[in-house]
Length: 358
Ligand SMILES: Nc1ncnc2c1ncn2[C@@H]1O[C@H](COP(=O)(O)OP(=O)(O)OP(=O)(O)O)[C@@H](O)[C@H]1O
Image (tube, rainbow, N blue to C red):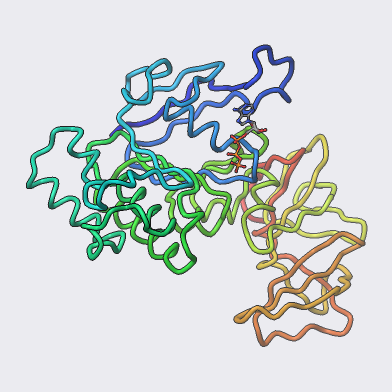
């Protein structure tokens, strides 16, 4: 296993890129810890697959270096990187049995038959395929074939990293949950470095210790699920993570207060003088509807089981609130925000507060 370092890495698919817009990946410096379970999350086209393919060696970056431990692998082909990969669609040998498909990477390494058989058995158990081990892969459903691909990706214990590119797309929802849980326990057991590409936040948050959020060719935050929820580093993270995402309102920041068109909101801390477009971000979970605060116009209320989502607006700007199931909404509601849960942004990037709680 290895720590993966991306140093001044950038990539353009064009031979002569002219400006930042020509780069699928903008310059980045990141270290992926040995043994970490990472999810690479972002909207379609933000550069997730490009980054994964650079790590695996399928794409050579146009700038910068990739290191596995101390070894510079920028120019090393995929085969030399000692990684396992699982793609969105199954890659299996149709004429081989399920058992032989799973054993293939181990036989390739010349491992002893007893070890192979033991390992194949435990992986088959994990993917729920012990009863079809002797069947040919041909004729199995796409779902089953993808489980074989997943199993094959995880069968070796001596890889530098396992890379997954949206591996559960073709798997049915119930099995998805099961496989995700299994991947997580496999990670706990063997401590492989795992990088898992997805555009599904539930998948990312349940799988990973660290979620790497990408937006327009940049990594905008690398953090624990809790950090992404509590302190989104960029407005995109606030909006993309959460259901519904973070509310964002243009505001002037005056020390420990935010001045909005309809009133002033106390912040949990003091802030420096800020330049550019300034906004406050508050998650719907920390919005209260009551008798005090900013005038709030309710648009609609959605009942979603244990809580209710209230969609509405403040001074014409959309603001959502999540209320407990039994909570009442006053006739003429006012919205207030939990001060220590408010984040402040200047030109989309989070600003660290200057002082402690006030
Ligand atoms: N082989 C290629 N040649 C030219 N441009 C490419 C190539 N592959 C990707 N791109 C472009 O690079 C950008 C990033 O694409 P990439 O596939 O890495 O994004 P992604 O986040 O994985 O998207 P998705 O979730 O849709 O797979 C996109 O603008 C895409 O059109």
